[in-house]
Every structure is written in C-alpha cells, then in structure tokens.
Length: 134
Image (tube, rainbow, N blue to C red; front, side, top):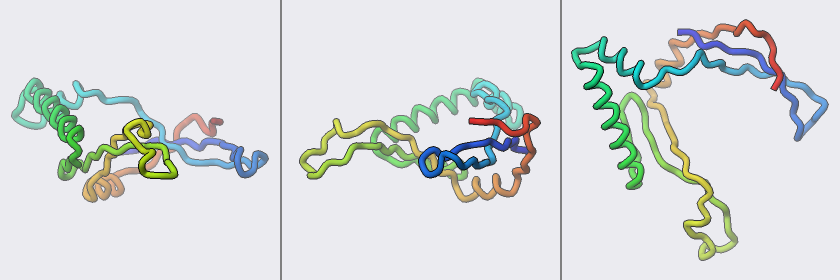
C-alpha cells in the first residue's frame, strides 16, 4: 500500500512573511464509498452485499444513538468514537450555557493495533506534480 505525497511551498505570515517553508503533504487517490466497501467485504466472506450494507447501516445508527446519549463507542480494532464540543469561555461559571457551545466535534481515536498496522504497512511515493503552492 502506498501513500502519495507532494512537497508544498508555504509562507508563515504570522511569524515571518518573508520566510518560505516547504512541507510534505499527503495526496488522496480518491474516495471509496460505502457501496464499494460493502461490495468488497461481501466478496471476502459468506455475507451478501445487502447483508453487509444492513450491518453497516445498523452500526451507523447505533453509533449515532450512543454518541447522542453521551457514550464513548469503542469498536475494538477499528478504534473509539467520542462526541466533544468547542465553546466560548466566560469569566464566571454562571455565564456559561448551551449557547456557549459553538460546534460539536466527532473525535476518532484509532486503536493501537490500527496505528501499528498502518505505520508498518505504508510506503511513501512522491506525487508527479512536483512542488505546489498553497
């Protein structure tokens, strides 16, 4: 499995607008949708594609319900999902309310096994486009 990357030219406008820096940036090869994932899984086991779609849909619904109730959902080797939020600060606790919440954030924490598998299996391939500017 190879991960494409490119080198990107950036300026740091906050610290030193004159200084140019280069960073490595991952490049996606595209999107694999739910239909493709379910099709591939159905060809690796005895379940039909419809069965896999049903299980994945039910998992999504259960994940939503559990997060909405305030639970962290641990899906084993896949990782953990947790709902958090970003809010504004106030000088006193009594000034904080539901209106202080700016947005909700779905936090994904991959399992150690997932991290290790990815770390060991990924090779890098430089993208053909060369250096790009952002």
